[in-house]
Image 1: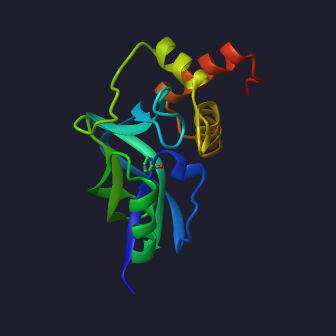
Image 2 (image 1 turned 135 degrees about the vertical axis):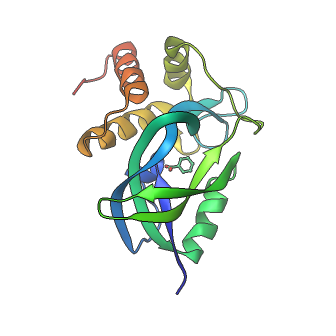
Image 3 (image 1 turned 60 degrees about the vertical axis):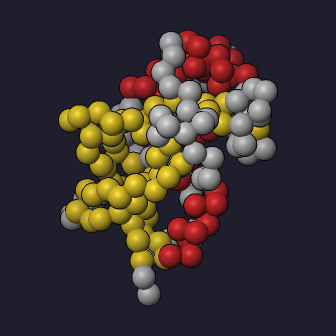
Amino acid sequence: MQDFWIFGYGSLIWRPDFPFLESRPGNICHWSRRFWQGSHDHRGTENRPGRVLTLIEREGKRCHGRAFRVTKEVLAHLDQREKNGYKRHDVSIQLPSMRVAGIVYIASQQNAAFLGDAPLEAIADQICQSEGPSGSNVEYLTKLADALKDLRINDDHVFRLDALVRKKLDLDTN
Ligand code: BEZ
């Protein structure tokens, strides 16, 4: 059986909707999580796109997430689920006890839905106002932030956005 490691840094961390052979904490070098990808098919609409995660190259930074060992059929499922601008990239994933070759899905600046940087307040407002077929953009952000906290992963960009959005919507802070 052919198996692959996939590195999850976003919704794969809190909603792995596929069977996996094993899952471990992992990290990859020189990448950072950012809410810079537009979403008109999952967490927003054509008229009101939401903002979801992609990875941006950042020399010397490490992105912490969760790695999954999966079969080839699961890769086909993920290719379909993440078709709006995301492409597979080969990466080296550091697991607790070893380094493995793997795959990560990244939406690059070249894809049509890429939104890029904006003031954090503006990103938070956009997240508060967006909803799509997969649910609200707020859910996507807050579930990710909760999952990162559970895994003891610190991410300034995500936690600052989470705090802003919770304040704007008067949600519980934790
Ligand atoms: C992830 O959770 O790793 C992920 C994020 C965006 C697209 C595909 C996967």
